[in-house]
Length: 244
Ligand SMILES: [Zn+2]
Ligand SMILES: [Zn+2]
Image (cartoon, rainbow, N blue to C red; front, side):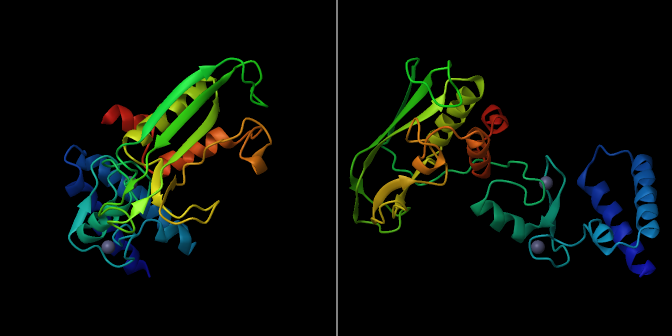
């Protein structure tokens, strides 16, 4: 048991030093001593396994041809992390965003947003509303869609955000998500069950001003937070807009 732990520590230290050129070696020695103490003083297997960085969290096996990510310094097998980034744009451990994920939303879509001070959203009285307009023509599916060569039906959607600073932030994120072709996709509609239609892509919108969550409207005090989480799951954050 004790031997295993010190093996882990050694490879951890090697990894850190090779992974980060700027790291002060004496400083990292201090840290490794600190970690050694932590492990020997603590018999909790959960805690010691948290230090077993030599295992790749994707394949749960020993690191093979390790690749260390630049921004967050987490390491994975090169094959594992390359495969992961094909589907998701963030580090599987800490969710730091790498690269840009784009979707298969039809390219000829249209998005507009206008402030309407006369619309009062329950829970945001006095702020007015941002009205979002989306429009897609009918078209033919391409290789990136489920049934290439077959037609799909377009759609027109209207959605509402409160005209607060947080609502304006969500608008900025939604515009970016639209640019990255992530807001809509082509597939079957969850609400109508129809196939081959332009439909929402897991970034929820409020298509009613009122009626609460059951009617896809307001009030819904956690909606703005949830939609930002959904956007972040697609890699759309304010940081990712600034970086790219
Ligand atoms: Zn792996
Ligand atoms: Zn990370």
